[in-house]
Image 1 (cartoon, rainbow, N blue to C red):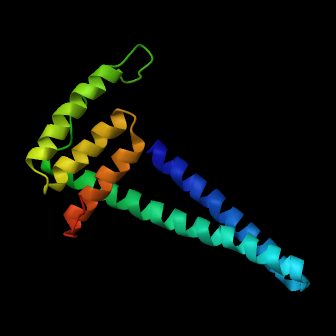
Image 2 (image 1 turned 45 degrees about the vertical axis):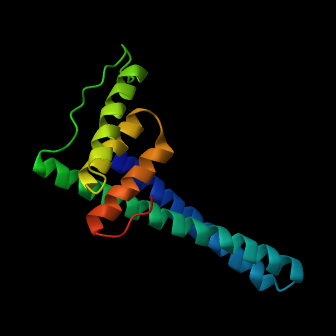
Amino acid sequence: MRAKITYAVTAVVLVFYFVLAGDRGVMLLQQGTLLTITFGVAVLILPVIGVWFLWANTRFVTKANRLGELLEAEGGLPVDELRRDTYGRIDRDSADEVFARRKVETEDAPGDWRCWFRLAVAYRDARDTPRARKAMQRAIALHEGRSVGA
């Protein structure tokens, strides 16, 4: 729940920034000189990119959470079997062991979104966020019945 609240607060702050930057961009455009119009367009591009990024990220997180809820309802969520140090951080060797098992499971059933979801969790636990995101994207695509590249 804490992550959802943090995400919502960050999104609200970003939307406020987008509105503020957009307002400044419009003000620059209204000045009417070549320089201010150029800067105004440049300033307006940032909120457009930001809104797209926020929308795409929110869509990804929503779909990933839905898959997690489905997997939980099926009883297929991965069990937390990771060793942790005294501060609660995941032991790297433990994460690597779990990752190796999840990778084999996914290689045995490459068309199963559930395996890809569990692999994404293993990647995240192994602190490999880019691969975790790609594995989760593949899980989402497989669940939606879209074709998935290699």
